[in-house]
Amino acid sequence: MKKKVGFIGWRGLVGSVLLERMIFKNDLSKINIKFFTTSQVGHNGPKINNKKFGILENAYDLHKLIELDIILTCQGSTYTEKVYFNLRKLGWKGFWIDASSCLRTNKNSIIVLDPVNYNFIIESINNGCKTFSGGNCTVSLMLMALGGLFSENLIKKIFVSTYQAASGAGSNYIKKLLLEMGILHNSVEKEINKNNFSILKIENVVSSLLKSKKFLRRFNDVPLAGNLIPWIDNDNGDGNSKEEIKGEFETNKILNLKFLDKVIIDSICVRVSTFRCHSQSFLIELKKNIFIKEVKEILCNHNKWIKLIDNTKSDTIANLTPSMVSGTLKILLGRIKKSNFGNKYITAFSIGDQLLWGASEPLRRILNILIKL
Ligand code: HSE
Image (tube, rainbow, N blue to C red):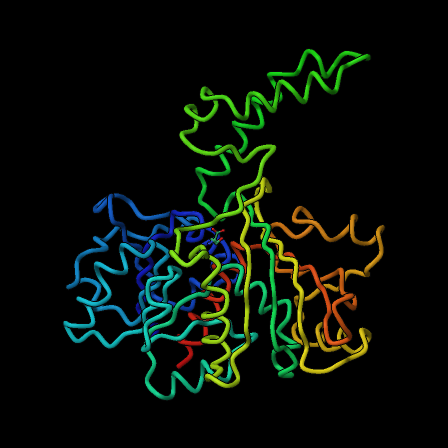
């Protein structure tokens, strides 16, 4: 019998990337899927490869949800908060798979990233775990990149600086970035096309525009084009952003590391004006001094998605960029070298698609594990 799966939030950015991957991997043929909505109950569901998927069901109707074996939601934390606990109170024993951060800290949930914590996932399922969250995008991408060093228990501490793409803040942010880019370009178009253009004049015009009240009012937000924003998500009140505190907590939860074995992770998370894919610069303290050649072997043997980039100028600038990885499952990893901090310290730089390994792919893969049970 095919499992009954309800999909909520399939039209948002993460949900639509997930649905696209599920269609590509032929996952829909393995399940009996129903599409739900929070706003368009009774409208037609999607038509995929000429097949109609019925009428959209109400995502708040607990009596409909209770009939499902698996709920897959990319609708966000507010939805999960409203529905998950009430459904469990009604005695629903199905599997809940969630892209949001709402249940990541819940003791009954595990954070899934099977190339990294497959054994823990299986052990948890065998122990009755029914609730699965996808990890924070930068955390999952970091673990995919550095998984070899984690699995060999070689990491003591990491400091990471992130360079997170506009799409991490939602689809409207891509639109905002493009509009800003257009306005900036228009403001200097005549000057830039002159043979004897004045770069100081151009710089002055765009910089003044970025600071102007008119520009701030137009987007009701800090500009991202020609800029960066070194704060992501809410203020945790202790000098860290919410995005930054997720790093250490989620990493240790995914790896199921207990108090004494915990890896220390600290970070500064930054929004940059790339469109898609999150980049991260790591300073890693290893537990022992290892040759760089061995570090590279350990890293690239961990999973088949890692693509090592030689630490040379030509390879790095040609291959280690967000645009080279966008829309793929590759995890680019380069700039691996010993640090001047000491012989146990190394640096690395990695880039991955935050909508794939950073969000949708771990969910698609846990769904595939669960439907085989
Ligand atoms: N928290 C992430 C961000 C979302 O703000 O970029 C995942 O892409």
